[in-house]
Amino acid sequence: MGVVTDAWAWLTTGAHWTGEEGVAARLAEHAYVSLLALLIAGAVALPLGLWLGHVGRGGALAVNVSNVGRAVPVFAVLALFMVSPLRNAGYVPTVTALVLFAVPPLLTNAYVGVREVDRAAVRAARGMGMTGGQVFRRVELPLAAPVVMTGIRSAAVQVVATATIAAMVGQGGLGRIITAGFALYDTAQVVAGAVLVALLALLVEGVLIGLDRLLVPRAPRPPRT
Amino acid sequence: MSAPNCLVANDWICAEYLRTRREELTDALVQHIGLTAASVVIALLVAVPLALLVRARPRLAAPVLGLTTLLYTVPSLAMFSLLLPVFGLSSALVVTGLVLYALTILVRNTLAGLEAVPVETREAARGLGFGPWRLLWQVELPLALPVLMAGLRMATVSTIALTTIGSVVGRGGLGNLIEDALPTFFKAQVLAASVLCVLLAVTADLLLLGVQRLLTPWSRAQGAPGGG
Image (cartoon, rainbow over all chains, first blue to last red; front, side, top):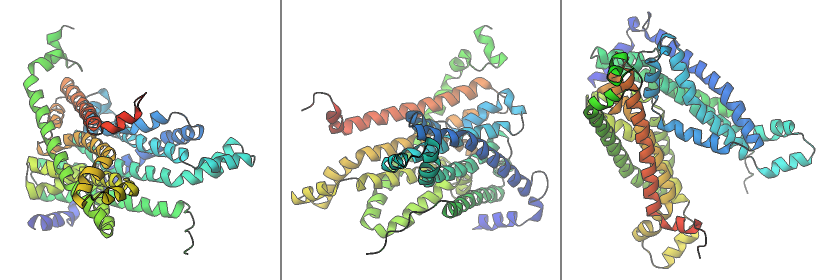
């Protein structure tokens, strides 16, 4: 119990929130690299995945890329960046690593989402005289939206979680509070940092579930019989 | 230029490093395999009964699946740190954290595998006088095996990658070597440890695929050409 109250005391100490290495600054860093990485990854992976799904090619690539991603340790990738000349490039190593890890879920889900749209619906749309672009915009995209959103959600959560690891190679973000706590043998700070990171990850998950509910059209519920 | 100087020149690839630090590399690899194996085995021992329980009492499905997914959301560095007050700087801390991550994948896949067993097959086995245990061992688990093994492979591969984060408490196997090499920008060590980590994941995946083939000979016979 002592640790919990100590961590609470650490969190409620105003001085820990301000300054260059305070919670507020670390939180801002964390949000900045996460958002930037997610935007870049989305700009690359979503159009590619949706297009591959629409033309029905590159399936093996789109699916396998996510399996390979799982086997590569984030820590190793970041460490490799940090012993290369990239280490002097500010946030570039972290953002690059995060983009690499966000692309697989985005690409795979975008591809699978479009691919799994009922072929009968696509044929019907074509039969009605829709062009390829119209079929994509008015049939495939809305029907694929739930799966694509799931991909965005898991990518976002993964990015926020992975940004924490950046601290282990000396880059910024909330993880730094944890690693600094380890360096000072300050368990209260370690736990306080961990709680902050866990809360942020859960918050992002929650917000995205909410957005998902708002944005993605639901199929009407079948009437009760 | 010549081989012995690569340690001084800090080259990415250095045969001299691999030769002189063989023992260090082997120790880290053994620790990595030990942590991963312990975590995956414990996770499997927890996940299968949990999946069976969820199947028997569907009301438990939402809380069990929700909780394991929630745990999966917690970043690994935070997870290990949150467990720190409970376990201290120990291997038990790393293994517990890794078990919690592997659980999500294993519970879901075990459940999906069991639910994919056709109702007719189950009915037929019951009609032949199979009790619940024999039904589980001789019919349901074998039929669920492909999906279960897919989950086991996924869990093993991601656990191998995650184990490196254990280096934050000094129990990260190959991750320790990476962390040790960082302050001095020792390239050969970072690259060697990273490559070994990926090779380990690929080897484990192929081994488990082999085990799956051995355990489910019928799925191979079906696909074989010229089969009756």
